[in-house]
Length: 143
Length: 113
Image (spheres, chains in turn red, green):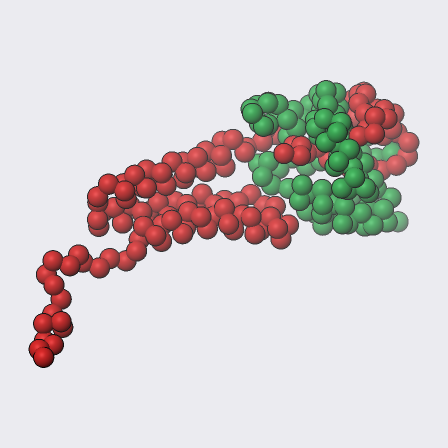
């Protein structure tokens, strides 16, 4: 039996490449996964690492498309670029909060207001004058 | 709701300092009641019409769900006479004060005698 033929690589076999596209995909899902884990650990800093990791993922996808074009990889790259762009837009533009310029500056009295507690009881500026120190924390809501 | 959960866990630290924590959103009354049940040591305000948010001007236009107005995350320390003593507004709404940072701010604002 002649085994010598099996040792010779076929000249038609495609060249082996690093799995850059897969690596890019991993980087793209790594950001949200890391964000979720950090939230679970109660770390609530601004997650700049998310668009940064996605950008690295896009770079890997570009290398992958450069090496082997075809149809699916460029389409995937476009999707990655879109996700990356949305993440940068969210972080840089949408999530930005304006500086506080309202009337309740340090040293000023809280302006008059009348609203209600969750049980329907009234809550007004007079309730802030009853000798009790208060943290007033405005949050974006339960959604 | 990570932020509120963390504050709830540290409620004794605030109570020791004789500081109450009042949290405000423009959620409807039903949602605010659910929030109150989840975090019984916080005082939950259902600022549905944003009366309080408008009075202190913390509305972030178009930044809420479905591009509606919502509260820009802002924290005030108010003394017992209704005067603001400290303000914190993060650069981005993804950022939050940790309970340790808030407690440090209360200690700096109202040092123990």
